Length: 273
Ligand SMILES: Nc1ncnc2c1ncn2[C@@H]1O[C@H](COP(=O)(O)OP(=O)(O)O)[C@@H](O)[C@H]1O
Ligand SMILES: CC(=O)N[C@@H](CCC(=O)OP(=O)(O)O)C(=O)O
Image 1 (spheres, protein in one colour):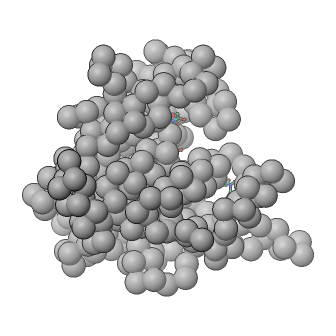
Image 2: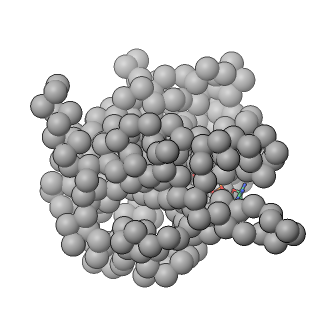
């Protein structure tokens, strides 16, 4: 166990977890995936955890299944869960794999169910939100095995427990848990805004860095709301472990991933204080 932990943490230095939000997936240019491929070829080992919230909502609407969010989490009935798994583990996961392959990269898609990669239990307010899970364990060795074979792991955020029950996990939460268990030093959250924004003197500005205290204040004042809340929560919980920083960036910025990896000040950085 200790040996496995050491292997995992040594590996973390050359690896990063990228969370790719459903809000931005369709808009990501081929050059984004080409940048990712080049990073991998240079010896950096990316891991992707993706969302797909808008595509889930579209599919639920087509099927006439009602959907609602409780504190940012989708209320997940058995019917909703079927669609969530179909969209995340199926179409979205394979779409990302194909886009990486299209630019000559190597990608291996799987969900948290495969090999019990993401183990989960019901969230505390499951009586209100249904089959929504929180992560109890991530099989980091499996992710490394895929990396050792030369592939970029592309992970859909569905969790599973020992009884075989599956859970819908918010993708930011799942990415934070993967980053922590893998012991990477950095998580990059790719979304549709250039970072955490605040209105200063009537102008919207991107904050280059935020402290945990500032995040709490911005949530309290409503300046951080909706889909940004699970991102900052995931960031605050993973920077307590091996993860040194979480960077929130806009996926449409040219070469955004390599710029973050080179330490350029871009997007919003949440680091350990
Ligand atoms: N302070 C903030 N700065 C920037 N975006 C914010 C902020 N607070 C809330 N948001 C919202 O968070 C959204 C990103 O979350 P979300 O739509 O869930 O994206 P994703 O699909 O990438 O997870 C932004 O489009 C914006 O509407
Ligand atoms: C529990 C919960 O809310 N799960 C999310 C999972 C997808 C997700 O998080 O996608 P984005 O990253 O695109 O928001 C959902 O059902 O929408």
